[in-house]
Length: 112
Image (cartoon, rainbow, N blue to C red; front, top):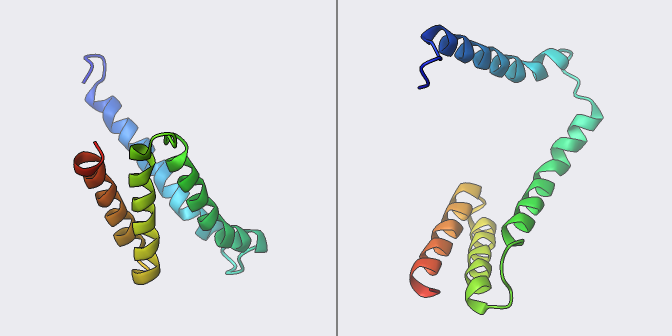
């Protein structure tokens, strides 16, 4: 820790972070106190998850060198593992975790 940072400064920083986190977590309950969720919020809740997943897929494949098969084959196999496991198990944690492990094993041991 830098010498100019005191314990009081650190505690104040932690307190501010805690208050901001609390306000952000409580905001939906305060804003939608009546129990009626606006249609725009319902719409965004329905369309945002697939849109975010789509952007993550594009981001993951953006820097792959498709001119070398050793670069893109592991990524395509790992993506297939994720899709197949997600269709089979319907568990994002299992499918993404298994796809990540499959990709890491392939680039470390099979596709050097």
